[in-house]
Image 1 (cartoon, helix red, strand yellow):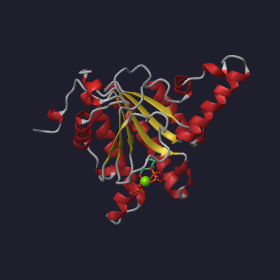
Image 2: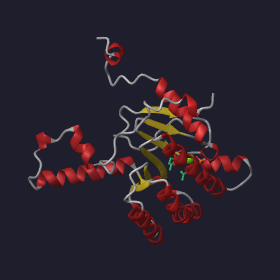
Image 3: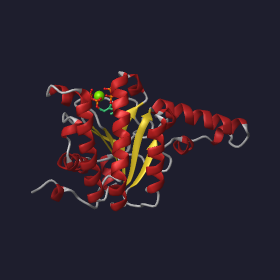
Length: 249
Ligand code: IPE
Ligand code: IPE
Ligand code: MG
């Protein structure tokens, strides 16, 4: 049976988040430079976005560039920015054809002006699409996002718009850059490392985690299907007992 046929389409994770890791090592293993890996990583992005849209995933968040990634060698950062501009420019017609809307989270004001402009145009051009919601985390750090949220909440308290006792977990959710999206049901990290690297720390409290050794440039639809099949085998208990979840108590 092929991998797609094993997926229960009635029980899909509404939101999948992916830490797309391993581009550099994938390239270096073949004696190529890291940028070669990033270029091939774009092929994987295409395949996975198409694969997610095909089966009806509603939200897909891709960790594309972290705040900490700004500290990489200038050549690599510049190369990544060029690749970003190029890819966005090329992909907008496909996004529109497939009814995919692009969103972005992160401190995009740090991006070079031409990248920001290209990005804003793509956000505008895809704004009417109501199929897959594709969220790119760019110049993103979860701790920075939480600091921003705390500052905004503190300002509301100071202006007497919010009482301290009225602050709940939901207040925090509403002040994060992901406030328009549900929490990820499934988080995938490629590249063989077992860490979160400052990604969606608050949002993944009850997310199912899936780690694979496969490097991002080698990750394809079938690998996404495998992760979803594994997700569908798990029992999400949210602190309750298994019997409660099965409805037998
Ligand atoms: C992920 O691959 C892409 C970015 C972080 C931009 P890496 O570039 O981190 O590749 P590795 O982990 O060094 O192999
Ligand atoms: C996480 O990968 C960031 C992205 C995939 C964009 P990193 O390669 O930056 O993470 P670390 O440094 O291995 O934790
Ligand atoms: Mg990495």
